[in-house]
Image (cartoon, rainbow, N blue to C red):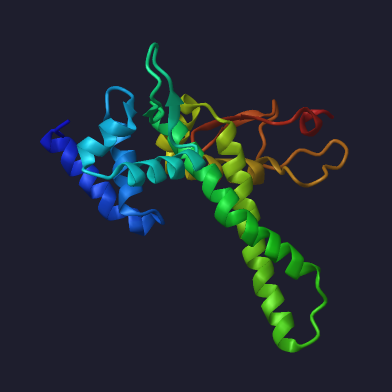
Length: 218
């Protein structure tokens, strides 16, 4: 099984990048080959294509299976095991994010929670614990966001990514609308914000808004 030039470049690059991602060259190349392969491959196919020994291929496949990055298949009248990477690249992204969370983030978050439960006895420990709390809050916020992302289907995730800077613009408009109609302040009876239209409807920087009923009722 000879690799086409473009496939070979891709496979070699993944092998070189493997050590930077925390995997070895063999695992990186095996995954790259499975990712671009139009069909499922068995261990013999992989070993022949990459010139790897059977034992190296077997260990590499076990590592990829532990990360849930390959699917095991069986073909009719064939006792060999075949492997294939998921077709959906967003499914791969979600799997990687989940596996890294379990292996790297969760243990750190657990340690930080334990540390915040302790009562510091020195000024240095008080300072250290305050810094740990900052890290804990950031990590917890990020894990919550990742959990929400995990629940999204691929189409929704693509739409979210494409929004980019538009999200910031929407938040800015929301803040302006909130300030314009006085949300967050308890209105007095019969009171309307000075800038609010009589019917409770209007625009802020081109954005349509409707004032809540409790602010428009007399």
